[in-house]
Length: 315
Image (cartoon, rainbow, N blue to C red):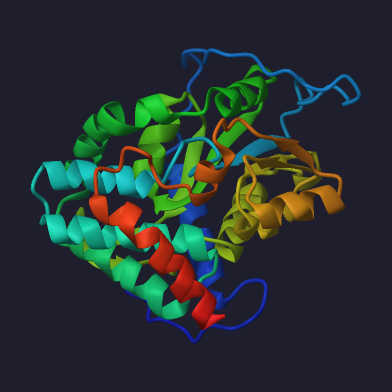
């Protein structure tokens, strides 16, 4: 696969890189679909408010559901959990884990895509896997899911996904996490597949480059649009679920948008448009940050105030 250079950021709904990332994610998701007829049923029930119509509609095979991953399906950042697992296996040093954790914390606190910071975070993650085989990371990812991720799945969101599966609909994760990590999580949850950030590989070895850009914000919407076209889905009959205002482009694509554990901006946006809301958090203030409580890195706690102050100065 050829490498693609970075394009100048434009203030519009989807840059050329967003389209490229979305199409690459859709293609990867279709190739790695993990659903089969014998997938185990998930536990949990979904209680809908009495005034809401029956949803999802059973037997509607042109409808599907798209779920954001971090803080929507899983508590915390999946890529950070994955990083913890790689650190445990001595893929990198502790200072790199601290730096990686700080980047995740900044992103959750700031809630904006600072191009310089995003590129630094991207380069940090890609440098870790460069030169490793895709199959190696997939195998390790299975272990990391059991160690750090399985117990962090929100039961309420899992039940919502199961409701779509029980209705005979396809369910996809849509995340900025690597598509390999997202695919493992989707398969473990019995979902159809995953749309994620596609890292370039040649002969099964990571090159340290991305195809397009991280699957974030507008790129997620482009991925959903591309997959819907390829799978003959009617987006007006589809549902999307997310906790972040960054996913408003994706949520706005579908006829049934849900705000799950929403941040303040998404909550306000959802209420203004009468979108459905679900909140499964117990400690709402802590959940807004979105960093795993058991991160195990002292720099996280000490750096919170500094991150907030820096963000305010840059505004």
